[in-house]
Image (cartoon, rainbow, N blue to C red; front, side, top):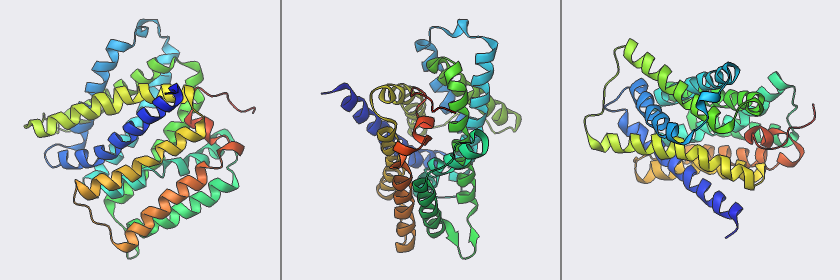
Length: 298
């Protein structure tokens, strides 16, 4: 099997795990607070990554600062996502989180002056229509859906942040700094708010460890390797599978049931993502997803 095919298949497996994680986190939130869950998830990922990051002592203060900056944005993304999962379904959260790849061109235009393509604009409009069908209740939006939508915006901002700083920091070390920053900030928030507590059953502990170790630490390694062997457009389209898996697991494991209108909205979101990402050949958005690719000429 060609290395590119093998790593892409591994990445598909990771997106399936991420899709399942929406259900696992939603269930865990019945006994844990969002801050406790994030602290435990990222602490477990941090501990595992320490073993595989040999050059941490050689990091400069600037590299540490870059990692803390990106990690702080990532902390906000996960905080809003996990908090939103307290109030909305796993299926809704997975589809709405996927809108990050549609927010990204907007932030790239705002902060990097990278103009979005016609495909990205069309994809954005299509996904926005889908979002309305999926989340609007009359003329209002559900609180949980709104929180996850804010998460998608911060996720897009995180992608743009990485685009700027990844070329100045070792990739593996940058991942460790981000994960550890999220762990520390989540722990501080949880303890200071008096919310921190450990899971009382293994049925909650095991999913957190799986998400922290496999879905965070190992997932980063696989995604990084896949990005060195496959094109940015291929990677982006694989990542679009995350909300698909989230919807499937939400239906079979979480008991989520979407109405016909909701399903039409979810389908439009996925179509919008695909329309946006298939325009990668004439845009720079794929390169934002791939820190290893050559940067466009400014």
